[in-house]
Amino acid sequence: MSAPTPFVPGARAAFTLGIETTLASRRAWLTGLLLGLPALLAVAYRVAAASGVELHLTGWQVYGDFAVTLYWVGLALPLVALLQSSGYAEEVEARTIVYLLTRPVSRASLLVGRFAAYFVFALGVTLAAQLATFLLLASQEGAGAFFGRVPGLVRDAGVLALALLAYGALFTLLGVLLRRPLLPGLGFLFGWELLANLPGYLPRLTVARHLRGLLPYAPPVEGLFGLFTPLPVSGWACLLSLALVIGGGLTLATLVFERREYVLPQ
Amino acid sequence: MSATIELTRASRWYGAVIALNDVTVSVPAGVTGLLGPNGAGKSTFLKLAAGLLQASQGEVKLLGEPAWGSPGLFSRVGLSPETDAFWETLTGLQFLVGLLRFHGWDEAECRRRAEAALELVALQDARDRRVGGYSKGMRQRLRVAQALAHDPEVLLLDEPLTGMDPVNRRRIIDLVRKLGREGRTVLVSSHILHEVEAMTRRVLLIHNGRVLAEGDVREIRELLDTHPHTVAFRARDPRQLARELVGSPHVLSLTFGAEGEWLTVQTARPDELYARVPEAAIAAGVSEMFATDEDLESVFRFLVSR
Image 1 (tube, helix red, strand yellow):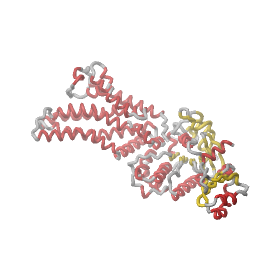
Image 2 (image 1 turned 90 degrees about the horizontal axis):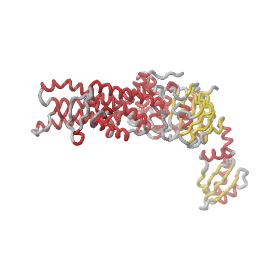
Image 3 (image 1 turned 45 degrees about the vertical axis):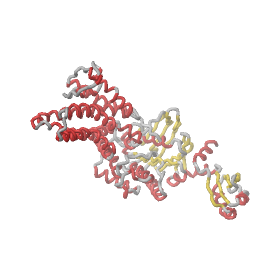
């Protein structure tokens, strides 16, 4: 039997190619813009504060409630995960997958390498945007308050990384299962994930609930959702659930990808 | 010669469409042409041989191993696909180096091999240009380059000459012949007989998912030569041309076109006809001449109906 290239060099090659193709794409700019929006907002906030405009929220509230909880965890990171990690469906659509499937590596190493490329790229952009937003907004109330909030920066970075991993694993699975995963993915994000706002146990079936369970912020909820209070979930339960989503999603995606036959359009 | 590609009662269907039907064939080392009209099943044959598709029925072996589910084989096999798809924002060199890394070589070795492959297909001057800016012929040559950059024992080339200019067409034909002489197995598909003839004498004829014939291209050429060829002439005086040709034993029929300046000739021996034409053509004032059924599809239909 001809032996394939070992797993790690194979995954490393897939990672490097994934990073190269991502960095050279227009989508990289779109991702940067999407994830960097709170940093721009933070600049606007500081300019407004310096100009004497009366602001109803403190910088820390804007950072924690809006930027981290509502924007990154609730919207931008799931969207970036959907755009970036469902890449195999895109390779099939663009018919470039033929080059990957004719390399002497296991499909598992292709999938893991490609997932790592998505994660490293998206996390790098996210953390840069988070750090800039934090520096601008958390320093508004003086040095003492700022240094007291630094541990929160590290915790938030961990939650953002978990969000990228969890949604990335789910959308990787969707990407190897479906030829066009974008619409079902959006349906999942703006349909199923809204269950996180309902009372009772239903929110525990969502990724969003377990991510929010790791954050201390409590963004104001308006409208009908404001009537409901989801049952609390412990931090450990949240971590365990997210680990299951990440591990289960990637394992299933690998199993499907290993066996799937890709018939390319002529 | 031992077979490097073996299909045993292999069939492949997509839903209700049968792309390859109960094919049993062996491909030995050297160059083999896979000849058939568009939609004959050539690409499916190559994808099955490359292990990109699984046979719906039967068995496909490559270098003695099952072609499907053996990723290690790709260190010994190169496939140049028909589909014109690339990561458009990468340069030609980045594209090749990126694919060579999957073989586990270090960066310097990948680069050395990529540069050598680009030189083989005369793309060294365009190596730092983005693939998105390449012409159709350059993209075709880059597909060939990625198939042979890792020095494989088996090369599967799907319509490798499409879109190439005459100089590079010649270059790739010479390259294929050289690879065959080196003892590699090269299976090259085409729907144009003279392209295949330029590369090899051994051909597989495929039509409607079945291998109709295999063997020396000269035998197939003789077989094809018994098929009536149709040649159309545009002449100032087509009746004069008809008078010159009507006595020839190889002319099967003559038909005048509706506009009064066309003559269509059916012949069993086109070579003999072409030999007689020059003198007759001068007298009749022939301005255009073309073979109407060089399309392989019509030749295959004829073969199937025999």
